[in-house]
Picture 1 (cartoon, rainbow, N blue to C red):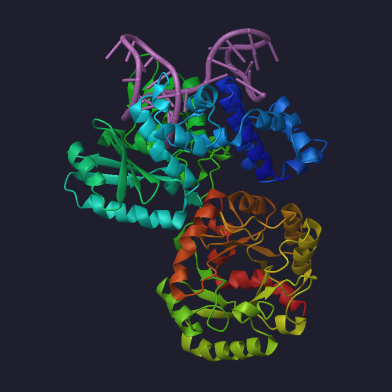
Picture 2 (cartoon, rainbow, N blue to C red; picture 1 turned 60 degrees about the horizontal axis):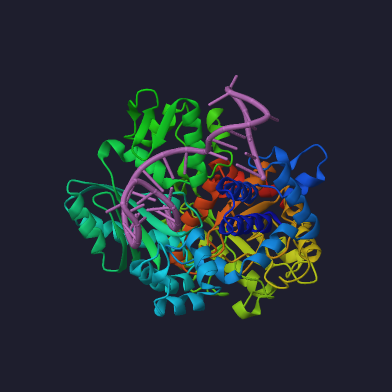
Amino acid sequence: MDNAKIAECFDEMAELLELRGENMFRVRAYRTGASTIRGLDESVAAILADPHRQLADLPGIGETLAQKTKVLVETGTLPQLEELRQSIPAGVVAMLGVPGLGAKKAMRLHQELAIGSLQELRDACEQGRVRGLKGFGEKTEAMILKGLSIAQAAGLRLSWYRASLLAEKIAQHMRGCAAVKKLAWAGSLRRGKETVGDLDLLVVASDRDAAMDRFESFPEVTQRIARGEDKKVSVRVERSFQVDLRLVEPDQFGAALQYFTGSKEHNVHLRKLAQQQGLKINEYGVFRESDQARLGGATEEEIYHAVGLPWIPPELREDRHEFQWAAADKLPRLVAVENIRGDLHMHTSASDGSATIREMADAAIALGLQYIAITDHSKRVSMAHGLDESRLREQWRMIDQLRDEYEGRLVILKGIECDILEEGGMDLADDCLAEADWVLASLHYGQRQSRQQITDRIIGAIENPHVDCVSHPTGRLIDRREPYDVDIDAVMRAAAKHHKLLEINANPARLDLHDVHAAAAKRHGIPLVINTDAHRPDDLGLMMCGINQARRAGLSPDDVANCWPITKLREWIGPKTAAH
DNA sequence: GCCGTTTTCGGCCCGACTGTTTTCAGTCG
């Protein structure tokens, strides 16, 4: 059982315990434990296997959770979780997905009206039975009815990329209001999370009412969830996506930005630090407990400096390593899109892309890149019209011809995204791969093989002297396909040993490696490559999504091989080709 | 359930908004 699954079990435990009315701090302890395990950059199985280390040394993991983790790893199940699942119908858990319904209300509906499913909940509301309960009224009933359709669309998170496009549209709309003096996005969008569940907009306005009215008049708004007197408006756009507006004073802007950027875990940690120093941090500023004197809040720097820390980049704010790094003044200088010099994974119309080499090259130059690799699919990917040895060599002859034309403007590397075959081994002959400047190895078929088979295939590719990099190493498609079962620790050890690179694929649906794995790669000393996997010229602009992943992993430009000058990149991959 | 320069018990981040319970609980972020 991997870290993500273990974290899911603990989150589910927390949910079920909360429904059962257990002590909220106990519930929180399970959530904290889940979050710790989800954020680990190595598998808990590896820690368990190491006699010198203890799971209980991890923050938020005590003896109880360590023991339960051990049981989960060894048996794949947890007796207490099974019991809880028996005692509370899945339909009641599903009720938590209805906005406005929490554990207390859901459980009372279950106990007092014998409601055990979303359908029964809908029926009860339509029959007016819910409003009869103490503490429930007509409005609550209407809220539940409305919320039920949202619950069905729940889990609807936008990719960071789509969320960023929506955010820009809203920002444009808001800038059209003269009362809006300043605005910034906070929340998971600012932290560069791979998916975004809602948007948080901070605004400084000369006229709060005007700014709130403007916000509600955004054409895509479908519902107003709440509107406070002068601080907050919440709306939905499309079917269920929530956007919050917060009005703040200029001298509170930094405090609010810090507060609403989160993550929740990061903020809890920060405020605990403040508490230990006799300070209080909230969205309005930093205050001294003794006399309530306000010590700052106009900028985020003031907040962090108040507790003796340097400013922490939003992408690192997950309460993983950032406080430790900040305290030791060892925060990494995070990679930025401006640092990117090359893109080493893109397709052309020779396989399943839509543009010519020249069109891709021109688009790359327009983005300021210094080098690219053309990496079409190999023949195994017949659906994508993958290239065999002879078509590939033909493409390389074309690149040779283009090189003169692009001399001094762009280096075009002769590459290939070569499939790792189901039975192991590479899809193209070694003598052909030996002629390439850049070889990506990808696994597209046989993704349902056993963990051992998949791991062996990928390590086999890493051991092939012509392979430079494994692209999208876990195969996941966010919200659509689970990663294939692979021993990623073993892949990392092999990549480190054989001097190979691993890819962060910037495609918003892939983002593979994800942040935690990319951080592990860095720990192994493996350089990462951030590639767009572009299938058309516009896709080259997706680099930002991969940059987000890299920043969240704490990577610096030095850790990212396509930030290097091409000479350094060639030196790195050189020894391999020199051997032949 | 976790944790400890307030250390083995007694705390655990903080505030806004809504609906309904006229003083607050529940939910949310």
